[in-house]
Length: 404
Image (cartoon, rainbow, N blue to C red; front, side):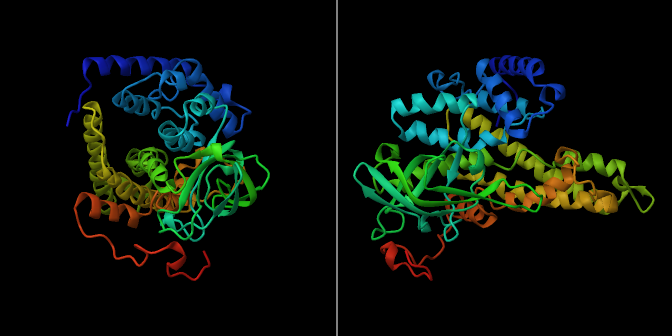
């Protein structure tokens, strides 16, 4: 494990810091824009200067940066309050899938506009009957000439309401085994036959959506991979999803809770002097340090040309519950002053409150705690797989209360 930048990496880091210092939009420049407009403005600025999606090939809008240079960029950009979350799925999950499975002409058409922020993509995977078990999905696609007719429902689709395109996994052969009857497409989210219904969240926002397909027609040319090869294509997306989401870079972290404990009082004394508070802070510091060192280990692997494996699931397994616990603890320290009564109060000024409400979902998105634990148990520790009743039989014969 290497904790220090090489001379070349240090030079690159200085270049990144200098550009960010001179180009991150000011609050005045962002004034009057909604979050999506802010995110697109910032993405376009990066693209125009050659700092968007830096690991991508130049012809797709990137700069052919190394994996370690991408990590350095992420570290430095995270120090600034920049809006970018609307592109996480498109850049981190959809684009790598397109690069692996789409044609050269398709990549030339779609990737530069994704890199520049002109177009936004979403991921249409989860269903009411197929969330953590993606291969249990029931949305159907039937071939009709050079097109596919799609009917079904997806749920928890982040950003569907503002996305231009999306990647979609459907069942094209219900008589095949569960993982073998799937196919993968990318679709125009403005097509006839798509209905999007936002899901109201506890925070009042609606970032997730239900998406219904009613005789949606998709050209066969927009299929990625062979018919029935959808699971293999989806694995490309899922492997990149772990890296894109990780342990969650935004929201409450140790420093913010530590700073709060120094400022608020408990039983007439600074909370930081309370032994129970100090014990919790020490525990979270150890966890955060462990995750940071695990990140350094991944960086070292990347710098050597290695591909980090399933052990990276520890980032989400530890990081997501830690963030939820810290947000709840912060509100306990704030007591009544942690309540927000002004409906116009900015979410950015309510870090602990916003994280408290969003963090339960963070433990589900991108793989639940249980899924992460299974990945580590089976693929890192070599423990036996869970027993399953759906192996080796057609999907139509899988025990279920719903009709395939």
